[in-house]
Amino acid sequence: ATHFAKVASDSGITRLHEVVAWMYAGEYLKAKRTLDNWNEEAYDYTGAIEIADVYVEMQHFSEAREQFEKEWHSGINSPYIVSRFAYTLMQLRDTEACQTIISTALKEKRNGIVEVQEEECDEHWTEADKDERIEQLMQEKGVLVALFEKLQNGYVPAFGYEFYPMGGCQLFGCQQH
Image (cartoon, rainbow, N blue to C red):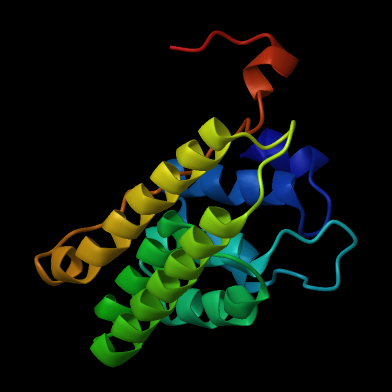
């Protein structure tokens, strides 16, 4: 965390690495203080969804909800993001909002399946590509269908944070296990 702090800019991904490192080191107060002062106007601003995810991991659910809501409607949300937001809402005992989030995500997934089914194939988009994408969307839909009941039964979606996303081990020469 101290090494990330030395090279981190205002509110970018390296600063987020610092926050997560503080959290993993058990320094929750340092991690939270840094997140609480996140600068949305920073040149290399790391988005609210990423910030929300770290707040969830530190069990600061009100702050997490506030961050999720900032970017919720700005794009297609993965089952991972939906599960973390829905979990946050369950922890805040807002089951109605939780169900709404999941229902909205399911609707988007169903619409995505229909769109892919209707797409024309060409030399860059084959039937096999189309079938593969539909299978992926169906799996994601299945995750979402089961999510609310799982959350009611105590399911806690795992934190999926990577310090070296997008092939970092190839870039930095580390060993993957």
